[in-house]
Length: 113
Image (cartoon, rainbow, N blue to C red; front, side):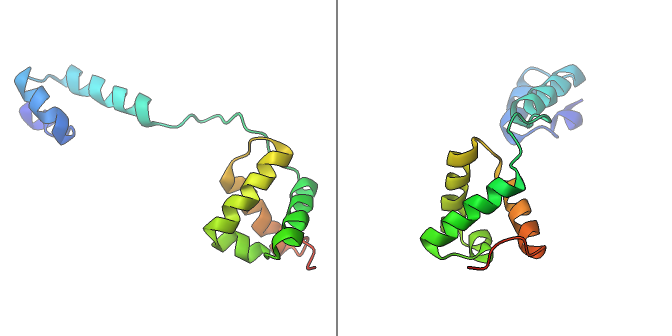
């Protein structure tokens, strides 16, 4: 039983040894860990429309002169761009917005000037 309890994080090993750990305690600890640190599978954020993203990109490019590549690479520009997107469309996730921006750039749907 003690070997099974040693698979738990080091902070809980001493506790497991002091209470003579059982499989149920280790299993409950794993469940608690998963419930505490796992992300929900369903997101409540709204998807962004291509036209909205192009409009936001155009106004951002007009203000800063930054290209889509600069937005994707530079963390400062990326955060400013995402803030602008969130102000205009509501709460959105970072990864889908940046992926869509990259896809629009690859399909040459973004204005050059």
